[in-house]
Length: 139
Image (cartoon, rainbow, N blue to C red):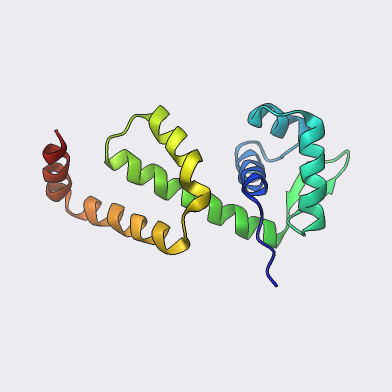
């Protein structure tokens, strides 16, 4: 049986990946500050993520390290987020609306739906005149 991370766990995995990409490390304090949660909440989630095999915790060193399994999940989440952001951007939605909507729906979309949205973005990028026609029709 494949264990699927919860929505909350996905948020943590995505944030750990982002912190590692931005600063080279993901510490509990940095995760807590960036997600606006208590350090104790992060510590509890980190224990769960370790138990599920998504994260290794190097105390007194660089902090959290994604396992291969954790990195694969985090990259998938990051790609899903980027696809939704691209899709909403081509629709010319403002950043605040995009952020709120992405957080609201990203955990509920199937891989097939995300792939279809990615294909639609690529289509509109290949045919900007069609995108312009679509956007004009919305006015």
